[in-house]
Length: 206
Image 1 (tube, one colour):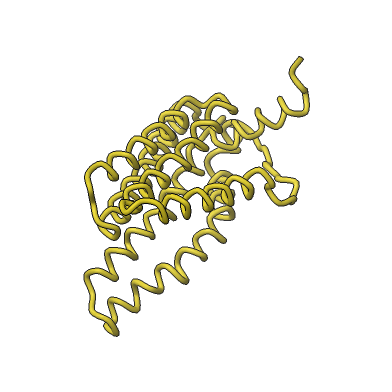
Image 2 (image 1 turned 135 degrees about the vertical axis):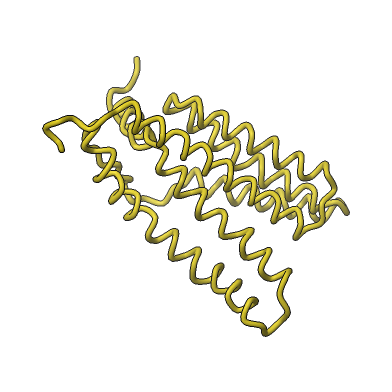
């Protein structure tokens, strides 16, 4: 029998992702990585462009990660909650043991592969695609959002494709994270557009 508490948590998580704004936030944050990589490869050491590129990584990305949740909630108060109601998605604050364990296991596996094969760069691209892709696919399955399953599968395929293309480390990293971010941005943007069109603001909420 379905655990009612788990079922409520799943429905809560599903609603939290119904408008695509979380995907847009992830996509914008991820796109800062290829922006940094492009900047450091196209500028000379000590130049203003190099300094700005480094600031994108060490200041821009942490700031975006810190502020994204607040920005998403502010946008939801304007667009989502007046249309389909309010929900607050809270985690219990405990360290994600499964996630930490998985990350540690993947790190150990990557170090083993790196030490036993010369083509470790290709395996890096595979890991970059398969790991977040599998997690996104599983989350999409858990909350019954098919688009997240599609995004997860495409992410995994893209990582393998970059590896098979034989790209160098920086070129492959730039290409992969550019595609990763664009994929999330596209999925979230289309979802948000469809959500707004499908749920006009009730007259009493205007």
